[in-house]
Image 1 (cartoon, helix red, strand yellow):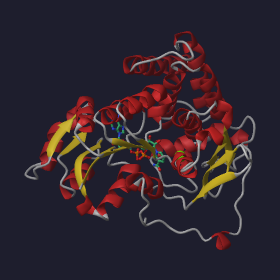
Image 2 (tube, rainbow, N blue to C red):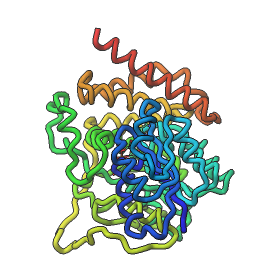
Image 3 (spheres, protein in one colour):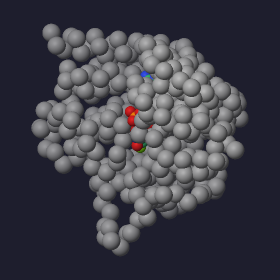
Length: 390
Ligand code: NAD
Ligand code: MG
């Protein structure tokens, strides 16, 4: 029996992970499930899967969670410390599927206790790439990428020497606004941005897909996870979302990974790795599909992609600042305090103002340094937004 924990169990990735575990429930002992305000869902899954503990991120919900779990034998816990403790409980495999930088401390706790970390939370590598990869090496831990593009690259690299890789191409659907005229983007609403043409995902990542901040995070994630140089990573718009990534080798050969847009593929690959197991995902019928199309991202349309380049060149704590400022700008867009195109402006301005505090490009930073920068960048983004409103 494998002991598994799911951080962010009530979210889109968490529920897809539970779907796969449910299909072979006798093979797994669920250690911890964590969630946010959706206590009904959290309690229902924790009781059904006979988890040891269920944790809500919110301290104020502890009593409600206790009540929802009463008589079930599942322990209840709440708050950021409890999340870390849950992740630190001995487990073989931990799914990191909290959204945002909040996923970083529990993810690190899971690595520290020696679990294999299935990493959906891309913010972990964006904010703390060097620290996390060092931690994995130190504890002989394994990180398996769950972001579909990174899982695709990982699979395309199986049996290959990373030294023979010339470039990695991450595909992007282009999100909700890929066919909108650029001048219309400034009036886009959160509801319009939160509809994805191909993937069914959480609200935040869906909006990040429309702005390409998601792809910007993924470019940085790829640099950190695979140890690539920034100019080895390319982005290609591929509206059908069937080719998830491509790996180009020094001999000119390209390995592509294809599959239906269903996160259970990447999750299942990480769950069964290093083996492959049958997965309940749609099989591609290429003859029926007829064609796959690709185009370069239009220059000027996706300032987030340019910011990702800048962050990688700058190094130091730029990734932590970039992600945190982005999270605040996204909060403000969702709350209708700023417009869609303002998000990138706020992040760019915040990075300008924080530049002197981002430390040396190749400096070593611990978790405290990273969390401090995360905090500082949120404040800076708030200040930038307040000044813009005056
Ligand atoms: P989601 O919004 O559907 O779920 C997020 C989960 O995190 C929920 O369980 C929520 O309760 C929890 N959570 C939210 N804020 C929290 C906080 N401050 N502290 C603790 N827990 C908190 O998100 P999702 O779409 O499942 O995405 C999860 C992660 O996986 C993100 O990092 C996202 O970028 C990444 N990812 C998602 C997909 C996808 O298809 N959904 C694909 C690739 C990568
Ligand atoms: Mg992705």
